[in-house]
Image (cartoon, rainbow, N blue to C red; front, side, top):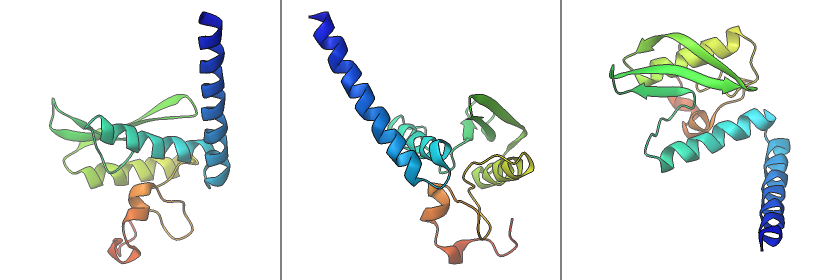
Length: 130
């Protein structure tokens, strides 16, 4: 009955939590890094794909904006951007300026990159370092 279903659900949740914890332990930025990668997968499934987590397309304006949650706090970057990549660069600038431990879309050497940064070959990175 209900008790069996509840314990089964609890077991599944505990198993999922353990898997998430091990992925977080393996990721250089822990929970935040795993959450960003999970978010990309969810966005792709829902058809709201952006190459850059934290960057959203606004249908009303036809522009991109930067908004994300970090440690349960919502962060919003002022301004809207015509180009997705410009919004991603604004995300990186905000993350650096506020010292957040969050993967960057255009990482410099030694910085942790998001999945989208890992997908680009290093040769494709912009030479002007921004």
